[in-house]
Image 1: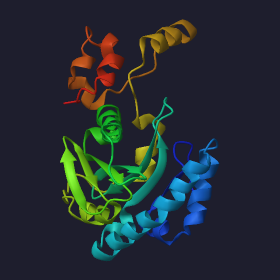
Image 2: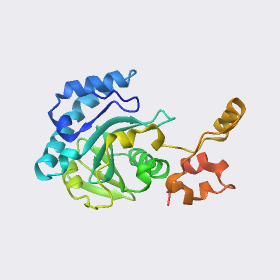
Image 3: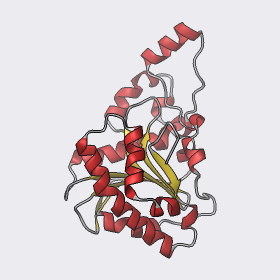
Length: 236
Protein backbone atom coordinates (compact mmCIF):
# COMPACT_ATOMS: atom_id res chain seq x y z
CA UNK A 1 0.00 0.00 0.00
CA UNK A 2 1.25 3.46 -0.83
CA UNK A 3 1.55 6.02 1.95
CA UNK A 4 2.45 8.80 -0.44
CA UNK A 5 0.06 11.72 -0.57
CA UNK A 6 0.51 12.08 -4.31
CA UNK A 7 -0.76 8.67 -5.40
CA UNK A 8 -2.95 5.77 -4.34
CA UNK A 9 -0.34 3.08 -4.94
CA UNK A 10 3.32 2.80 -5.86
CA UNK A 11 5.53 -0.27 -5.85
CA UNK A 12 8.07 -2.18 -7.86
CA UNK A 13 6.67 -4.57 -10.48
CA UNK A 14 7.11 -7.80 -8.44
CA UNK A 15 5.17 -6.43 -5.48
CA UNK A 16 2.39 -5.11 -7.72
CA UNK A 17 2.14 -8.46 -9.49
CA UNK A 18 1.99 -10.54 -6.30
CA UNK A 19 -0.37 -8.35 -4.24
CA UNK A 20 -4.03 -9.49 -4.23
CA UNK A 21 -5.97 -7.07 -6.39
CA UNK A 22 -8.47 -6.32 -3.62
CA UNK A 23 -5.67 -4.96 -1.42
CA UNK A 24 -4.57 -2.62 -4.21
CA UNK A 25 -8.16 -1.52 -4.71
CA UNK A 26 -8.52 -0.86 -0.98
CA UNK A 27 -5.41 1.31 -1.11
CA UNK A 28 -6.87 3.27 -4.01
CA UNK A 29 -10.22 3.65 -2.25
CA UNK A 30 -8.47 4.99 0.85
CA UNK A 31 -6.69 7.55 -1.31
CA UNK A 32 -9.62 8.56 -3.53
CA UNK A 33 -12.10 9.05 -0.73
CA UNK A 34 -14.97 10.17 -2.96
CA UNK A 35 -14.73 7.17 -5.30
CA UNK A 36 -18.19 5.94 -6.24
CA UNK A 37 -19.31 2.40 -7.15
CA UNK A 38 -18.51 2.95 -10.83
CA UNK A 39 -14.92 3.91 -10.04
CA UNK A 40 -14.50 0.94 -7.71
CA UNK A 41 -15.80 -1.41 -10.41
CA UNK A 42 -13.35 0.12 -12.87
CA UNK A 43 -10.48 -0.66 -10.50
CA UNK A 44 -11.72 -4.20 -9.96
CA UNK A 45 -11.92 -4.72 -13.73
CA UNK A 46 -8.58 -3.15 -14.60
CA UNK A 47 -6.15 -4.19 -11.85
CA UNK A 48 -6.03 -7.95 -12.66
CA UNK A 49 -5.32 -7.39 -16.40
CA UNK A 50 -2.59 -4.92 -15.48
CA UNK A 51 -1.08 -7.44 -13.08
CA UNK A 52 -1.10 -10.04 -15.86
CA UNK A 53 0.72 -7.68 -18.20
CA UNK A 54 3.29 -6.84 -15.53
CA UNK A 55 3.76 -10.58 -14.97
CA UNK A 56 4.47 -11.04 -18.70
CA UNK A 57 7.05 -8.27 -18.59
CA UNK A 58 8.72 -9.81 -15.54
CA UNK A 59 9.03 -13.10 -17.38
CA UNK A 60 10.61 -11.64 -20.51
CA UNK A 61 12.76 -8.78 -19.14
CA UNK A 62 15.44 -9.49 -16.55
CA UNK A 63 15.57 -5.78 -15.64
CA UNK A 64 11.82 -5.60 -14.94
CA UNK A 65 12.11 -6.13 -11.15
CA UNK A 66 13.45 -2.57 -11.03
CA UNK A 67 10.44 -1.15 -12.90
CA UNK A 68 7.64 0.49 -10.93
CA UNK A 69 3.88 0.95 -11.00
CA UNK A 70 2.14 4.13 -9.80
CA UNK A 71 -1.67 4.24 -9.65
CA UNK A 72 -3.95 7.27 -9.29
CA UNK A 73 -1.16 9.85 -9.39
CA UNK A 74 -2.48 13.34 -8.66
CA UNK A 75 -0.79 16.10 -10.58
CA UNK A 76 0.41 18.55 -7.91
CA UNK A 77 -1.69 21.68 -7.41
CA UNK A 78 -4.48 20.06 -9.46
CA UNK A 79 -7.28 17.55 -8.96
CA UNK A 80 -6.55 15.56 -12.12
CA UNK A 81 -5.25 12.01 -11.64
CA UNK A 82 -3.54 9.69 -14.08
CA UNK A 83 -4.82 6.10 -13.98
CA UNK A 84 -1.49 4.30 -14.27
CA UNK A 85 2.16 5.23 -14.70
CA UNK A 86 4.87 2.67 -15.46
CA UNK A 87 8.47 3.67 -14.77
CA UNK A 88 10.25 1.26 -17.11
CA UNK A 89 13.54 1.24 -19.04
CA UNK A 90 14.14 4.88 -18.17
CA UNK A 91 10.82 5.86 -19.73
CA UNK A 92 7.65 7.21 -18.14
CA UNK A 93 4.62 5.45 -19.61
CA UNK A 94 1.23 7.02 -18.83
CA UNK A 95 -1.78 4.73 -19.27
CA UNK A 96 -5.29 6.15 -19.44
CA UNK A 97 -7.71 3.24 -19.00
CA UNK A 98 -11.23 3.29 -20.42
CA UNK A 99 -13.87 0.60 -19.87
CA UNK A 100 -14.93 0.46 -23.50
CA UNK A 101 -13.94 -1.00 -26.86
CA UNK A 102 -13.26 2.25 -28.70
CA UNK A 103 -11.89 5.42 -27.10
CA UNK A 104 -13.44 8.77 -27.85
CA UNK A 105 -11.45 11.75 -29.02
CA UNK A 106 -11.85 13.18 -25.51
CA UNK A 107 -10.24 10.03 -24.07
CA UNK A 108 -7.28 10.39 -26.42
CA UNK A 109 -6.95 14.10 -25.69
CA UNK A 110 -6.99 13.35 -21.96
CA UNK A 111 -4.01 11.01 -22.26
CA UNK A 112 -2.17 13.54 -24.43
CA UNK A 113 -2.78 16.33 -21.91
CA UNK A 114 -1.30 14.33 -19.02
CA UNK A 115 1.85 13.59 -20.99
CA UNK A 116 2.17 17.15 -22.26
CA UNK A 117 2.01 18.55 -18.74
CA UNK A 118 4.53 16.05 -17.41
CA UNK A 119 6.95 16.77 -20.24
CA UNK A 120 6.72 20.49 -19.67
CA UNK A 121 6.62 20.78 -15.89
CA UNK A 122 8.11 17.65 -14.31
CA UNK A 123 11.85 17.80 -13.81
CA UNK A 124 12.46 14.09 -14.46
CA UNK A 125 10.11 13.96 -17.43
CA UNK A 126 11.91 16.80 -19.16
CA UNK A 127 15.01 14.65 -19.74
CA UNK A 128 13.61 11.22 -20.63
CA UNK A 129 10.98 9.64 -22.91
CA UNK A 130 7.38 10.13 -21.76
CA UNK A 131 4.72 8.16 -23.66
CA UNK A 132 0.94 8.29 -23.69
CA UNK A 133 -1.16 5.13 -23.93
CA UNK A 134 -4.94 5.20 -24.24
CA UNK A 135 -6.11 1.71 -23.27
CA UNK A 136 -9.75 0.74 -23.96
CA UNK A 137 -10.07 -2.29 -21.69
CA UNK A 138 -12.44 -4.17 -24.05
CA UNK A 139 -10.15 -3.87 -27.06
CA UNK A 140 -7.40 -6.21 -28.20
CA UNK A 141 -3.97 -5.69 -29.70
CA UNK A 142 -2.28 -2.54 -30.89
CA UNK A 143 -4.87 -0.38 -32.65
CA UNK A 144 -3.33 2.86 -33.87
CA UNK A 145 -1.44 5.99 -33.01
CA UNK A 146 -2.92 9.47 -33.04
CA UNK A 147 -0.12 12.00 -32.89
CA UNK A 148 1.67 11.21 -29.60
CA UNK A 149 -0.97 8.83 -28.20
CA UNK A 150 -0.76 5.07 -28.72
CA UNK A 151 -4.13 3.29 -28.67
CA UNK A 152 -4.03 -0.37 -27.70
CA UNK A 153 -5.88 -3.05 -25.79
CA UNK A 154 -4.64 -4.19 -22.38
CA UNK A 155 -3.21 -7.41 -23.87
CA UNK A 156 -0.73 -5.34 -25.89
CA UNK A 157 0.70 -3.37 -22.96
CA UNK A 158 3.43 -5.92 -22.19
CA UNK A 159 4.66 -5.91 -25.79
CA UNK A 160 4.70 -2.12 -25.85
CA UNK A 161 6.82 -1.92 -22.69
CA UNK A 162 9.13 -4.68 -23.86
CA UNK A 163 9.75 -2.76 -27.11
CA UNK A 164 10.87 0.40 -25.31
CA UNK A 165 14.49 1.27 -26.05
CA UNK A 166 17.21 0.56 -23.51
CA UNK A 167 19.21 3.78 -23.40
CA UNK A 168 22.05 3.95 -20.84
CA UNK A 169 21.44 7.68 -20.48
CA UNK A 170 18.12 6.96 -18.78
CA UNK A 171 18.29 4.40 -15.96
CA UNK A 172 14.94 3.28 -14.52
CA UNK A 173 13.34 6.13 -12.61
CA UNK A 174 12.47 5.42 -8.97
CA UNK A 175 9.07 6.28 -7.49
CA UNK A 176 10.82 8.41 -4.86
CA UNK A 177 12.38 10.60 -7.56
CA UNK A 178 9.18 10.79 -9.60
CA UNK A 179 6.95 11.59 -6.63
CA UNK A 180 9.32 14.08 -4.99
CA UNK A 181 7.53 17.30 -4.09
CA UNK A 182 10.22 19.40 -5.75
CA UNK A 183 10.06 17.51 -9.05
CA UNK A 184 6.90 19.17 -10.37
CA UNK A 185 6.82 22.94 -10.74
CA UNK A 186 3.93 24.24 -12.87
CA UNK A 187 3.83 27.91 -13.64
CA UNK A 188 1.43 29.76 -11.34
CA UNK A 189 -1.62 31.44 -12.81
CA UNK A 190 -1.85 35.21 -12.57
CA UNK A 191 -4.33 34.88 -9.69
CA UNK A 192 -2.07 32.46 -7.80
CA UNK A 193 0.97 34.64 -8.40
CA UNK A 194 -0.83 37.78 -7.21
CA UNK A 195 -2.09 36.00 -4.08
CA UNK A 196 1.38 34.66 -3.22
CA UNK A 197 2.97 38.04 -3.79
CA UNK A 198 0.35 39.73 -1.59
CA UNK A 199 0.43 37.15 1.22
CA UNK A 200 4.14 36.29 1.31
CA UNK A 201 5.83 39.19 -0.43
CA UNK A 202 7.57 36.68 -2.69
CA UNK A 203 6.91 34.03 -5.33
CA UNK A 204 7.82 30.36 -4.98
CA UNK A 205 10.72 29.09 -7.12
CA UNK A 206 9.62 27.93 -10.55
CA UNK A 207 11.34 25.12 -12.39
CA UNK A 208 10.35 25.40 -16.03
CA UNK A 209 12.14 22.28 -17.30
CA UNK A 210 11.48 21.88 -21.02
CA UNK A 211 8.94 24.68 -20.94
CA UNK A 212 11.88 27.09 -20.69
CA UNK A 213 12.20 26.86 -24.46
CA UNK A 214 8.47 27.11 -25.12
CA UNK A 215 6.74 30.31 -26.15
CA UNK A 216 4.93 30.35 -22.80
CA UNK A 217 8.26 30.88 -21.00
CA UNK A 218 8.82 34.24 -22.68
CA UNK A 219 7.65 37.26 -20.68
CA UNK A 220 5.13 38.38 -23.25
CA UNK A 221 3.49 34.94 -23.32
CA UNK A 222 3.34 33.84 -19.68
CA UNK A 223 0.00 35.50 -19.06
CA UNK A 224 -1.44 33.28 -21.80
CA UNK A 225 -0.19 30.03 -20.19
CA UNK A 226 -3.60 28.67 -19.26
CA UNK A 227 -5.12 29.46 -22.65
CA UNK A 228 -2.22 27.72 -24.40
CA UNK A 229 -2.79 24.60 -22.32
CA UNK A 230 -6.50 24.62 -23.13
CA UNK A 231 -5.62 24.67 -26.82
CA UNK A 232 -3.36 21.63 -26.24
CA UNK A 233 -0.32 23.21 -27.82
CA UNK A 234 2.64 20.80 -27.75
CA UNK A 235 5.64 21.60 -25.60
CA UNK A 236 8.67 21.49 -27.86
